[in-house]
Image (cartoon, rainbow, N blue to C red; front, side):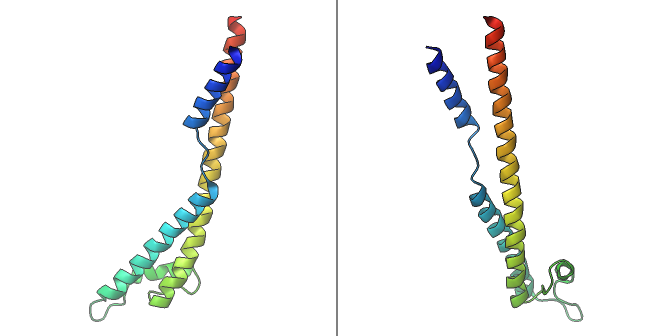
Length: 121
């Protein structure tokens, strides 16, 4: 009977601490970041700027960190590619950290459970 409760406990723990798909989160975060930069650039281009001012002066500063980025349609596409890679790396690292911390937490729970079971006998 002990093996049934052990497997049930493990099943509950694995359902509660399900593994996050690393590649899926990387693609999702990268796509969202790319879309945000592309939309920000497009909104500035469509809105325009008052006479005597440049379009998107603050967003233009991203060109310091992203070589070739400008507030233009081509620059928006290039910036979206840059941001996709940056977001994908961020999503990949977040998913890895998430999975690792949950894996370690499950190990702690299982060890504590075994310890208390041993002490009760």
